Image (tube, rainbow, N blue to C red; front, top):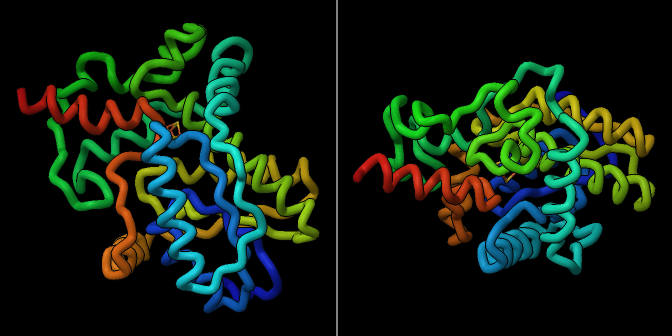
Length: 250
Ligand code: SF4
């Protein structure tokens, strides 16, 4: 990462994913300030566990927190998904298909290194991995499929827009997100949405590919005893992780 300097808002999706980006940003001369906003995490007890792990990490690492959203934000998340299903399309022109969730089923099986992999035939063959055209124009039905690039785009936009707003309100100029450490997230989409959110709030989104340090960060989090989640966050990704596994083994 290019040498930086000054304060930067670091939006965190969870504690474990914060470990490596925090190290990189500090090494580059930035002064990260933490922000946790993730109404996509379901159910509430899972949200609470991740939030507590994040707060524990922040305390341990001396990470100043800009703001901790007092409210869960579940209704806000669902409203955003519904609005997207009714009127908008986040990624109509981007040609994406599939989603984050595929990463949990294939290959490494998630952050805890669980098996969890599933043959290509699994649910994808049953319509789980939908192309762009399939998830559009189906209203709620389209958005409620277990795999939806549309849904993830709305999810990114909700979180990054809030992060950009908080960045501006705090008088900072730069922001980034720990989502960029995950090999299972859509980096190009995050970059685009982050830049759009930044432009709207008149702050700058810093794209940095933190993925090379994903495993290192996960090992560090385990060594600290942080809670390690096993699915992305929303109830759809939870189903994808465990429902898909059950189907694959049945
Ligand atoms: S799979 Fe992850 S990124 Fe996509 S909508 Fe669910 S929580 Fe958000």
